[in-house]
Image (cartoon, rainbow, N blue to C red):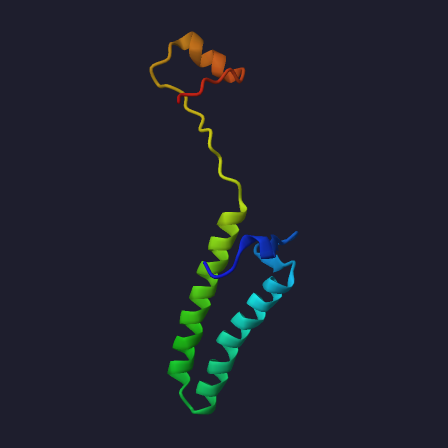
Length: 104
């Protein structure tokens, strides 16, 4: 992961992240430069296939990095709900009343 979760916040609508500090804006500007400048140079040299490969490779890396940042921003659930399959019929009704047991 190249970016840090502290540099971003999740968008209010849609999916993704938005920068909240100068490091986040620098990260965004650097990625824009990495994507666009070589693409334009390759297009100017009439290397269309290479420019599309560059765009796909760097775009995929950017998507991977943003997903890593978003995953690090979400709190991890440490507790896991487990309902045992060997319970009796009366215990199954207890789970309908939200009487859950946590297996550790």
